[in-house]
Length: 77
Image 1 (cartoon, rainbow, N blue to C red):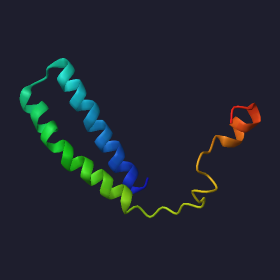
Image 2: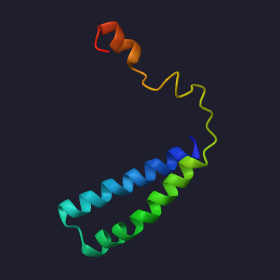
Image 3: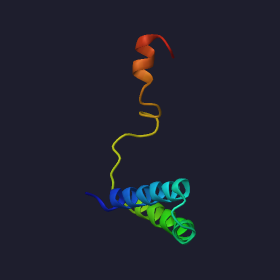
């Protein structure tokens, strides 16, 4: 598993826990802790994604909208 996928998974999990804690009123300390940690976690996730060693083979002009061939086949584009 790549490093950026772990960061995305952790931040998504924390978001789900945060929303669940609010819904079930689990405790203000936990809710505030997750609320205050949220921006730091999002910045860490963005940094992990931006520095990830991923090579993209398609250019924007070639793959700007990947469903376009299917839409043209159906006569929608």
